[in-house]
Image 1 (cartoon, helix red, strand yellow):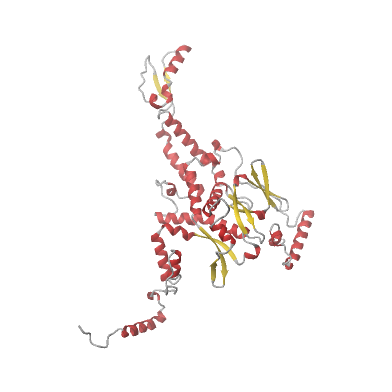
Image 2 (cartoon, rainbow, N blue to C red):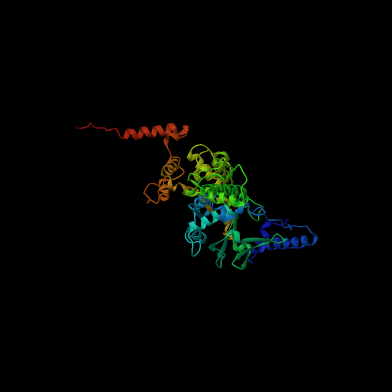
Length: 443
């Protein structure tokens, strides 16, 4: 099996006269691919069916637009989208002592200031989160300068993008725009995907169509019931056979009983042995409210969102007990997988091949503490008291001016190693002795 580093499109990106060492492996890989194609083996992979959403007609017409009209779906997608949009993302350089923030890198400007000529960095991150939560894939057109640095990112609607795979495992993107189909090569597209088969991620909204359709049906049923003034359907029973004109007259006289509104709330007088028999079951018998509450939990399960975050507080959650613990569970099990996928995609496709061992992109989840003053204070206190951060580093994070003498790392004395305890005590006694006055104190 040939080295994947020299496969298309990576082979095309790294082909350079300045890299003569890679010529032999690349030539061997090309020969192996060509020979494998003739012999039916080698490293040629047959393309499989790339499934993004289950086939078949949508249940109850629950396409993306209609699905977003379900309040729980809207709340879950909005929560994920806006949480990702509040994060900060930076470019770092690996050093022998750790890492440094590289503000001068072109990609850092794209991710934090202006991704393109019409969007802010928050809107860019929100578009990533929304497309991932809905379709399981997000795509961006990558604009590069002459050196190959990314200088702009333009989001592309995931529902309009198609991936075409060839028998030699190469692939291209087809983007539908009006009546045109624009073709992109992999180097021009930044793609991030949820779980899938490696080419496309599975659509959460697509695979949740049954749960969403059930919520839509319950919502439509409740709306029809309320539009009729809350009056259940029924029949009028008469103890004798009516003539056609009499039957029509009775039906017209009692038509208001089904129309709802103020007419349905009036008192109707039944005569000549007429009896009214209810046909449909009442909302209490149908447990409509219980079913609608179950629909909330069912949809939250798909998006892995705690139900209390979409204002459903009737049931406990397996994320833990207490709002703080459940919020931490949301960040750990919902936001973190999205963020990790986006980081790996940016490191793979936005950095030049020669930069990847030196630079990397990372989200800063600590930015979520911005609205939690008590949480930030507790975090900073722990970091400073354990010598992991200096006071000036804390002040920089809080956008405060630097102070002289606040660059040293400090620790509490109660964490002094036992073998150093006697030395610390002696030094303390010596300093205390210097403070004892040698002359009488005059009043």
